[in-house]
Length: 315
Ligand code: T6T
Image (tube, rainbow, N blue to C red; front, side):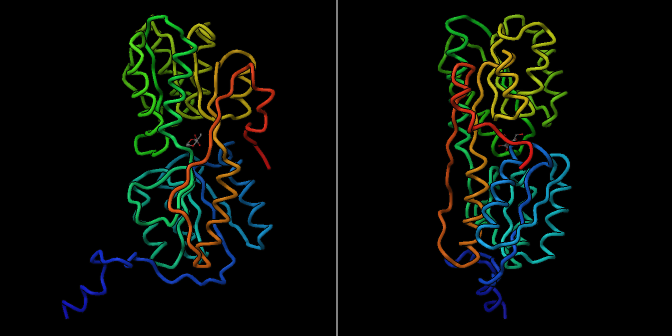
């Protein structure tokens, strides 16, 4: 009895992936992004909808109201009960979503990660995201260049601990800043992905560190909040601000000098490929386990040539 049970029960042997059977003819997909109505995710959604329609698949798109794992897990539970062939998801926490996604997989649903990813790499069949560590490093190089050889402190604003993407961006930023002896790295702060919290942190940091010369906002919300705080303090353009993402508001802030550079991702590519891979996985075709999509630095000088990288707030 015990031996038999062990043989069938996830002892780690090759080929045992803990996945249920997927019907190769299932034409239903689900997409769960990290947050409703947020331009990075809206841009993923628009591209995913187009790709699904052109392949003749249905796609059910949902998202939590806030970047929040409890609500996202609940949405996932509802979707699993409708038995799509694949769920394309941006997990809002690199650990908390592992159990419900493992459950989806056990129910024969292919799991495709877009943008964020789980720490446990055995659950998803494929992941598509920016090279976030490299993105953080590019942000630091860009900031160092903007500051020049001035001495001073720099601050990175992360979102929520356990967000794979912004954790990697912060790490890439910190490692690169360490190579610039004129820049002193302040402890990275968490904004809980709230622009208002980001703004408060930047105001407090300005007050406590009059030598602040640069800020890195690791995503759209932190960057938008930081831009507001620097502008309110009359410090726009004196304290250099490098943001990540390219929402309509971030692009406007770049144009009016409240932000000096943006590292834009390619959410359209992530959404389109996410759907194509989900379909391949449903059909049992091999897919690459991990793919990094490109990013590009945008400044006021080149923004008119790079407008194809701006995000959408509706399809
Ligand atoms: O920066 C993106 C995304 O890559 C990240 O995982 C979470 O925040 C954003 O959605 C922007 O708000």
